[in-house]
Length: 217
Image (cartoon, rainbow, N blue to C red; front, top):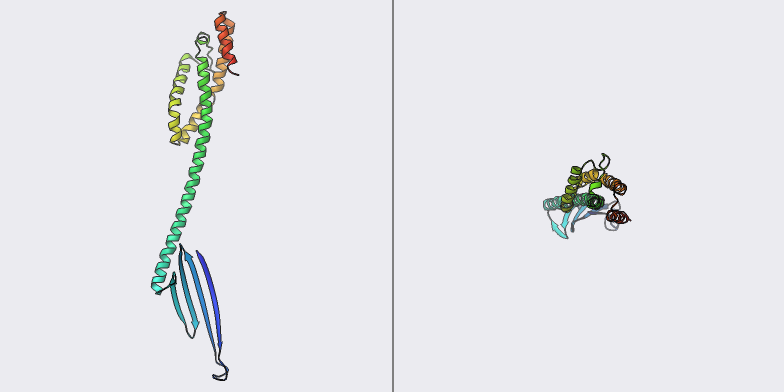
């Protein structure tokens, strides 16, 4: 809304040759002009001997009643549009924040998922199966290993849907629960390889172990 006020002071000094010298007329004109949503409202007030009010909308003279009626309508519309813009801005910021959170959480989770799947694949090598070393700090049992493998296969196929739904809580929950597993699986793999080296004299198995461990680098 643009507001512009102009004051005019017109002092008419009438010549003493025609009127008494003490006769002076004071006339003040006040012009208020406001622009809202492309509409210009102009109010002209003339005080003094010729006191009057004139109202204009977009240059057209209107009655006082219509002037204020339209003024209030346009002003309310301007306020409503401003409020809507602020709400849209707030929503845009919320959406952006949510998108960033989802993208970061998804990337962190995906890194862990890839690590776990890769380690499960290495641990599932037939050459290692009979040498598995189960502990409560790595893999506790064959059942737990199978359950983890099945869960990761299922998650791998459903993760994209979770990301598309912007389910930040599920992503954070999964990240928290899966975060320890790369370290646990890596230790499980190392313990198993050490067990296989110690107990196997099969040349083919030993060569396979060498290949598995070298593939890590």
